[in-house]
Amino acid sequence: KSINDIFSLRTGLSFDRRRVGADITYTDVAGNVTFSGEEVTTFDYVALPLEPRLCIGNDFQLIVGTGLNFAYMINRDDDSNIITNGVQGNPWLDLNEYSSFQDRFDLGIIAMWGLRAKINENLLFSTEIRGVYDINQTEIMPVNPIDEGMHNMSISTISFLLGLSYSL
Image (cartoon, rainbow, N blue to C red; front, side):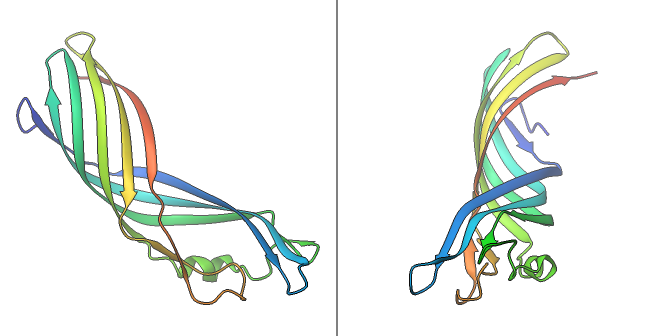
């Protein structure tokens, strides 16, 4: 929504997918590997950004913006190739219990810059780089019961976007 020729406010619901991966290895006191593999977790969010923007130029614009990103986790998927004592799978991972530990609300700070070019009266081309820095950390259950307590994880993202917009 344009406030005037220079300032605008970007908002609207969007879908946001974030992936986190880690190589995990545990050993016993004798140094034997008891637990190893790769753990990949995918988080799906519905997001609502509130991002004031400054637009400089006419037919060719420089756009700079910053604001807040409110997101709610709607799905979580854990995929692993963990080997525990020679057997595929993670015996400590109950996906239903694991996802119930999640703090589903996520708050982030958005920073972006981009370029927009007017192709004709009705058509605009845009490109931007957008970063979202995670303010609150997601609390996760440990993947091994030997771990004590909960672990915190911060998921920040950088996106490159290209777009065309047509006005009637």
